[in-house]
Length: 278
Image 1 (cartoon, rainbow, N blue to C red):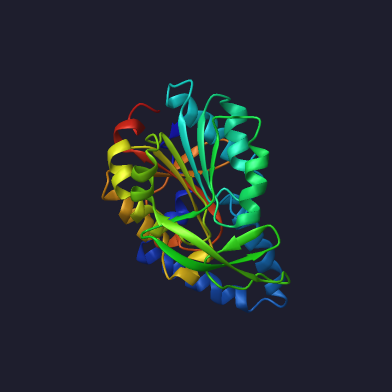
Image 2 (cartoon, rainbow, N blue to C red):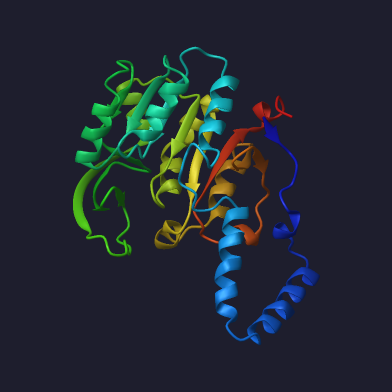
C-alpha cells in the first residue's frame, strides 16, 4: 500500500523560520564541549529515521515494496528488469516472491554476471544480460572493489580498485534489438549512473509505464547529479516519487533537505497507478 501520510514533515521544511532556527541551534551546539560526539550520534539517529544506508533488503522495506508492486501488477508472470544486478541477489528475491516472473538482469562486470547467472539457474525464464545500460552505446572503464563496482573512479575506502573495461548500451535500443518484453517493474542500482540509464530508457518508460525503483546516494556526487534531476525526469513523465521505509512507502515531494547523499531507495509510480493505492 502506498501511503500519502507525511514522514516527520519538519525535515521537508524550507521556510525562512526553519532555516533561521536551525542556524541558531547549530551555533549553540558549537559551544558545547565534545559536541562532535553528540553530533555523530544525532547523525546516526537521523540516518535511522531516514532509513538511509540500510542495505538489508529483508529489513529496509525493499522486499516488502517489491511484493506490493508484484501484487499490483496483477500478473502471474510479470516482466522485471534488474539493472545493476551485481551477483543476482535482488533478482533472486523477486523470483522467490513470484516464481514465474520473467526477470531480465543486466550486469556489466563479467565475473559478477557469471555469478548472477549461476544464482538464477533454478529459474529458466530468468535471463542474464552481461552488459550495462546507459544513454548511448559505449565502451567504458568501470571500477570494481570487493563485491561492488562503479562507473566513477571514487574512493572505495580500504578496498583495492580494479579497472574493468565494460560494454554499455542505450536501453531503448537494446530492448528493441533483443525484442525484450515491456517491463512492469524496473530496479536501477548503478552507483550514480541512474540518470543516464533513465534517459536511455525514456521511450520504454513512457510507453510501458512501469514501476521504477532507483537508488540515491553518495555516488551522485561523482556524477555531478542530484536527486532533483531524477525527480525532474519522472515529473516530466507524470510519475510520483515514494521513498521506501521498512513498513511502508512514503510519498516525498522534493526539497533541499533530501539532498543529503545518504544511500536510500525510492520508487517512481505512474500517476494513474498511484491513484489505485490508499
